[in-house]
Image 1 (cartoon, one colour):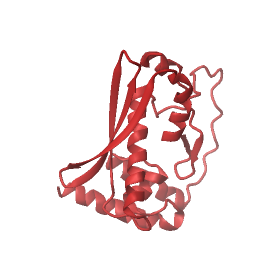
Image 2 (cartoon, one colour):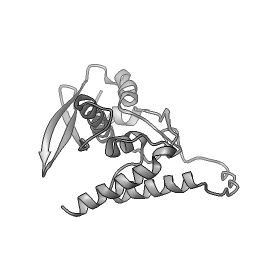
Image 3 (tube, rainbow, N blue to C red):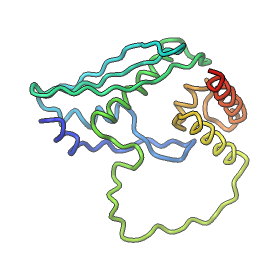
Image 4 (cartoon, one colour):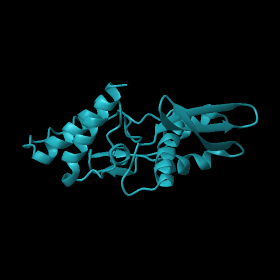
Length: 191
């Protein structure tokens, strides 16, 4: 099977729920699970390289597809944090590798993370408008964290928050997360 056919047939549903941002997502393993039955005689190889860009180290992931007639390589990068409490160096690198590989696979197989995989655009009626609810302090802080991450060009996911700040995305940590994101923004602005 050629890459174009796989891109058209691949269905990698978002089977995980992000409780912090209240949305569905897929991970690298989900994409691999969905693509394996479509590969046939074709081969898919994932690999990583550590590269220094400026003063920071990044994991550069490669997703290589070959079927004997065509070879296509997609790459993606993920940065290791300066420090991550409770994790050793191999765990930090592993998280960055998994993140980079997911986005290399997204590029290779034309997976768009902005819509759910099962969204077909054929809804027959408009969804009911939810009743407006008053935002809690915790909800307000979630919005502030998401905004801070967007300003940094980062995705608002619990693994990414942990990756960038060393803190789990839990209500008890929201103030600390905001402080660390502000410090990261200042650090990046000073370069």
